[in-house]
Amino acid sequence: MEIIYEIDKIKLKSSVTTMGSYDGIHRGHFHIINKVNAISNQLNTRSVVITFDPHPRNLIGSPKDKVKLLMSLEKKIELIKSFSIDYLVILKFDTILMEMGAEEFLKKILIKNFSPKCIVSGDDHTFGYNRSGDINYLRKFCIANNIALEVVKPLKDGEMSISSTNIRNLIENGFMRRANYELGSMYGFYAKVVRGSGRGKKLKYPTANLMPVEKDQLLPKIGVYFTKCIINGLSRYGMCNFGVRPTFGEIDLVLEVHLFDDELDNLYDKCIWIEFLERVRNEIKFSSVEELIKQLEKDKSNCLSLKYKYELGE
Image 1 (cartoon, rainbow, N blue to C red):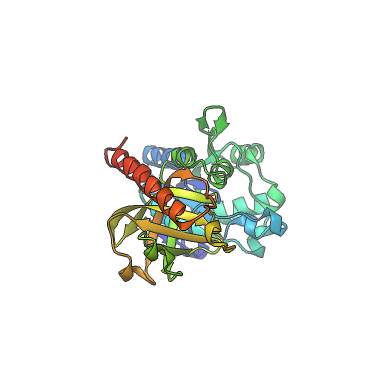
Image 2 (cartoon, rainbow, N blue to C red):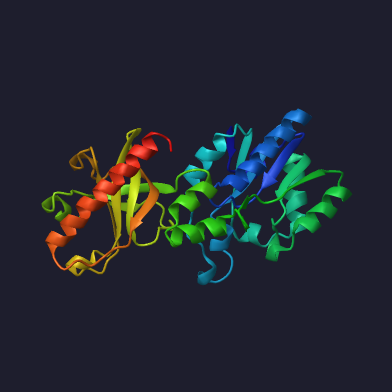
């Protein structure tokens, strides 16, 4: 896969193309990208995915409209690469692109640079200034310009359509198993290991404090989680607390992970990948440190039971 950051660096004679913010590559996106590949193989032409950075909603509208990111650009690239797409085009979303109308975008970007034989789109996709382009607009445009259009209906999880918005809501409310199912992968992000208070070591549950690399990273609901970390290419299971540690009267949010079978001293300042596999319980204020330690023992036992299931692939 070739990654293109500057639109004037690519000019194809033909292609099959899809476009979108792709905020967290999920099962619905898998379906669209697979369709792009299938049609491009049938037409013997190049497959193209066009996406944007930063997320359009973080430039358009008021601060309340901004979104916390399901996935960093780095992880998005990694996942799209796994589909063997020919070109991933990452357009810088700036005021010029924001103010470009739907027709101008299609003619000056899509047709000029990619000469699409076919455009693949979700049926709820919008684009262009003030979202002036929708699927009906795109259908009329494709007919007028002799371009095939493949409209992909959203995948369903029960009665609910799989979408980035729904997955974000699931994560924010602690429903990690359902969120991971809809994602088609385990929710996680890159984080830097930073120094904490050292309290976990005194409790005989040493932890690594983590700081998400992405400043707009979506974080899960406060609580205790069964997690997996990827460190130097190796998987390490553990349990993670995300919260304010109320037993000690603290108020700052802290993300800290205890690994079951690894030393933590050599991890400081390193960047690791953490995945949130299951939510174990709410964060609780305990009456004493002894009560906290008893609960930590129960949490570890529960997480080790989950570890066995995950290792068996259940």
